[in-house]
Image (cartoon, rainbow over all chains, first blue to last red; front, top):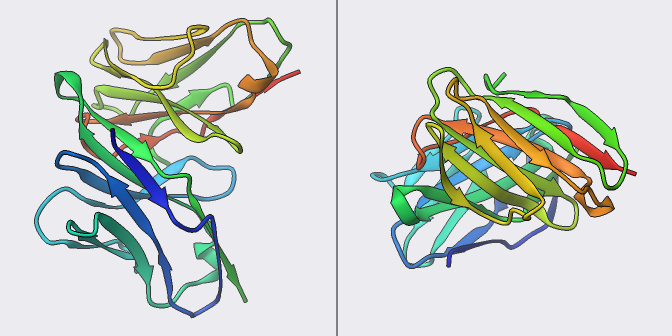
Amino acid sequence: AQSVTQLDSQVPVFEEAPVELRCNYSSSVSVYLFWYVQYPNQGLQLLLKYLSGSTLVESINGFEAEFNKSQTSFHLRKPSVHISDTAEYFCAVSDLRTRGSYIPTFGRGTSLIVHP
Amino acid sequence: DSGVTQTPKHLITATGQRVTLRCSPRSGDLSVYWYQQSLDQGLQFLIQYYNGEERAKGNILERFSAQQFPDLHSELNLSSLELGDSALYFCASSLNPHYEQYFGPGTRLTVT
């Protein structure tokens, strides 16, 4: 069975500092990987995804994540954070289940807190 | 705006009662997922439908049931409610089951 571990439940950081949110997964089959962001009182929004191809994927707002198959990791990074990046971040992994459905497994989330 | 709508936004009910949560997926999306989010359990996958057919079940209790209708909207029925069922319930949709999901704003259920 697949699982996702987000190693930090909370990451405090100062504005304009770099940040890395860590995600490790375990799965016996090929996977698709996702990062979602949840702002207060809202649903989750897709931040970026890895399906195939280049192992480095980027979002439109400056985040990037690198798929590392040997280390089964998909860490999220941003070189300079803003106050508006304060949110909950979820890593998700999908593998193949019965009848061709990819069921996502979500990590417990990492709360990114950006201080001025 | 993700294009996924959920009603109601808030629901307060008593233990033992039954409620129905409704979800309309993004236009064109055939897959609908239901999730429960609580502080102690995190985000839990409940059930998935694809074009009206149940595709996968997660940690869904027997007291809970769902269906997807021909117009692709979905309903999640929660019965014999307990205090521990208080949570945020999200619906999400996707074009294909293995692609990214688009989440609705959620229904906050409070059981008193």
